[in-house]
Length: 359
Image 1 (tube, rainbow, N blue to C red):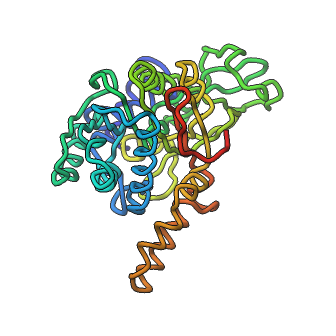
Image 2 (cartoon, rainbow, N blue to C red):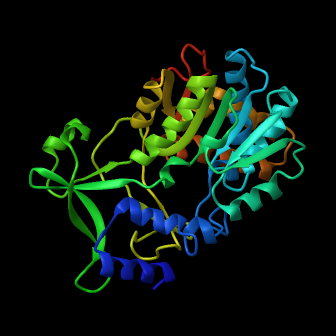
C-alpha cells in the first residue's frame, strides 16, 4: 500500500467516500505524496511520453502555427508567448529555436504557467540556454495584460473530472469508498446531476453507464479565453479526447508505460480521462472567440509534417530516416496519436487562423 493510499483510506474511514475529482486531485497534486509533486513522469524512465518528447518536429510545427496566428492578429508588439502545463520545457525549447529565427520580436516575452516547484526547476534547466526573458507563473490570473498566444499539450486530461453513474432514472455522483474487502472501491453517492447537463444519449444509456463532467477544465479554458477576449491573441491545445460529448468511463491510470488499476497505486500512477473538446470550445465561444477542432494527425499533416520530416531526413543515414518515419507515424498515424488526440484552436473573432477546415 502506498503512503498516499493509506492516507486516503484513513480519510474515507473518518469522513466517508470522496468524489472522483477529489481523488484525482489527491493522487496527482498532494503536496507530500502526489504524482506530479514527487515523480518524474515523462520519457522512457517515467510513465508516459508526450508529443514534444517524441520528436522536435512537433514543437517546430506548433511554433510555425503560433507565428502565423500572431501575424493573422496583426503582429502585435508586446505580445506574450505562454505555455500552460509545460512538462519538462521541451516544447517551449523547440518553439523558441524556431521563433527566434522567424522573428525574435514575437518571442521576446515568455511565460511558463506551472504549479509544481519540482517541474519548474526542470524547466529552468531545459531553457537555461534559450537567451529569452522567461517568467514563471502559478496561474493564468497572474499573467501581465498583453496579447496572449498560449499553447497547452496534455494539460486538460490531468485536470480532475467528476463522474456520474446511472442508477434507475437518476445519475448519481461516483465516488471512492471502502469495499467489503477493506480496499478502495467505487461507490455511488447521493448527489445527482441536472438533466440539462447530460448529453442526449443519456436518456437511453444502460444502468451503470458513466458520464464525465469536468467543470474545472472549463474554468481553466474560461480563464484563458477571458484574457484573449480582453487583450487579443490565440491559443492552441492538444490532448486525447472527443470532439462530441458522450457517455462512457475514460478514467485511467498509467504506470511504467502500462495501464494500471485506477485505485491500486495512488500517487505512483498518472490519472487522466478523455477531454470533452466540445465543452472547451463552447467555453471559448461564450467569450466571443472563434474555436476550431480537428484530429492531431490531420492538423500536423496540414502544417507540413511530412515535408519537415523529409528535410530532416534528406542528408541523414538510413537508421535516422527510419527513426524520423517512426516519429511521424506516432504523431500523426491513425493507429497512434493521430486520431485519438485532438486539437483545439481559439482566437479573437475573425482571426484567419491556419487550420484544417473541420469545424
